[in-house]
Image (tube, rainbow, N blue to C red; front, side, top):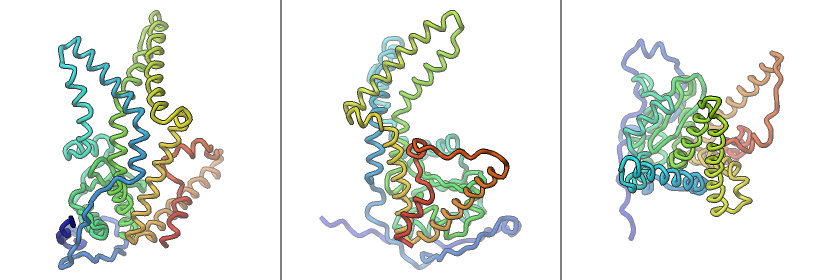
Amino acid sequence: MTPPPAQPQDPGDGPVPPSDPHLNAAAPHPPDDLIYEHGPGRRVYYTAHQRRVDITALGQLALALPAFLTSALVVLLVSTVLDGCLGLPFWIPVVLWPASGALVFHRPTEDLLARYLLGLRRPMPREAARLEPVWREVTAIAGIDGAQYQLWVEESDDLNAYAAAGHIVGVTRFALEQLPSGQLAAVLAHELGHHTGGHAWSSLLSQWYGLPGRALWRALRAMARSVVTPARCAVYLAVGVLLLAIGGLASTAAAVLYGLPLLLVLPYLSAAVGRRAELRADRHAAALGFAPNLAEVMEAMHANEVKARQALAVGGERLERESTPARLLSTHPDLPTRLHHLRRYL
């Protein structure tokens, strides 16, 4: 059955200057080089599928299965203890823990994540007046309902942006104040690609469902460090046995799921999937027409990296070349690689 066509939506007005002239005069004025084609009187047609799950999102979830199974065993252990000690029904933690993944798309929970985990804040009126029109233009070109997402700002002098949880899109104050509108739009289009491809929520779910296992690991390490000297050996032995048991469970789960050879390269595979997600987000921005702007941002970032390295060399500090394992464990491709993949769109 053919689905009905998407209804046209009015994205609102174009860029609106701040109403306070003093705020406007005190703020930096990056060039507004973006052509706003979706202002009043223009219709925007939303795509039928606002989100999808691409191969990298599926890869992130698949590689997180060993951590998920290990955490599930930890939850079962805690449920047994609570049932025996406090009389809490065994099934309550067992059911609540898998269901808690829905909090990724819960707006109040996302607010807490943005504020206290990522260190973001809501845009001030002057920042919103600059950020929101650019965001509306990007989402209108993509056929995405931009009102479903929440815009945030990080108080930072670095050039960076975020796509997190189900609806969080953040940029740094530096990017907001220094980038021309076209380059800011390219950065936002890249982050939108993470959301529409399912990278943001799948990454957060992978981390969330691996949290019980990581929490137990840290608790056992803290317990071992805080024990007084006479009992330390016995506690270390007990903690070591528990860690070996947990590690054995995780290794067994990974070996059953992927086989022993893949178990040895699991961290490298996870990093490779992360790099592929970045390249896919770059492709999303380029397909929307922002390839030249995105390339300009990357070239500027690469030039800054080169200058920083040269400054360290002049200061007499030794520059150590990044090792091959470190590069393979990086979740982001290097900038020359990303620029190489953008060439086909330029």
